[in-house]
Image (tube, rainbow, N blue to C red):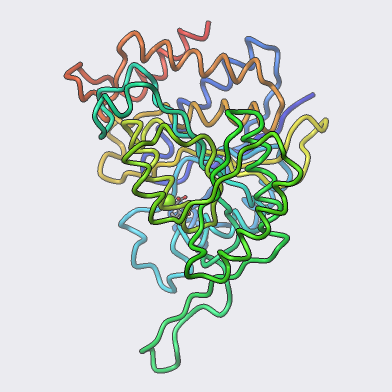
Length: 365
Ligand code: IPM
Ligand code: MG
């Protein structure tokens, strides 16, 4: 069976990091006799420049016909003032991709590789014991997409609307409970139920779903408290499930506890089964952005994108052994001291994007 993967490198450091991730995919393919068809397509600013739209219809079509999508990053200062703003890469490509592909569940693991404890922004006595939490973020609802949205006629008032239906809350809650069941058995649902009606519905539905998961310990936390607890005592968390915007903010915070945004992968999953029914269609990308300041210099950390390939193998293709092989290889090169500039905080000499790719390949073989 051939796995069809759409490869959307995007802007900034996107092409550099995706190139390394592709090498790794090809290598695990050879090692475990997996056949990949990797098809590149335009997305983001580069697509806007070439076609006038950051998400050309043929790119969307390709994604819909694939088992999974590997994405680099989109956006950059060149396109910050594109008019109308709905054609900016972030809102014109990323959000419609999520929405059109039905990718409602965003998994953002924040794992501290022990070798990197010294680059965490927290003291060693707080993160030294290790950190392994998962943020499950609802990705296609809430204030990002709710209507009405926009400006009043005189331009003096702006509106964004937060909307959630029971159905949207229920399906993301299920993802949270399933993840917690496979991990440490603890699910923390984060909301703002003391103020928001959407949060009160959220809590109600999460409690209902919890009846199906007697083996998972459910707790609730208000989002402001959660932001504080993440820096006070992050080890208390196993799985956090939360709505779109809270998840956006908390996942950035959680990721920095691990030392670098450059390390963290993400998976955005829908409900369609992939070829052979072995997994769920999804989009995989590093959680960091296009980092225009370092683009083209060959210094970006490719590990988040490489680790995103591991998530792709696990969640969309059901190839767990190959997924673990990538994660083990990354862990090995870090333990042996390989550092790109973003994680070289302990004084070791940084290596290039390609050199990091070379080392992961070597560790795989
Ligand atoms: C993310 C990003 C996006 C989001 C932006 C670029 C639209 O911050 O993936 O976390 O807010 O979802
Ligand atoms: Mg974000």
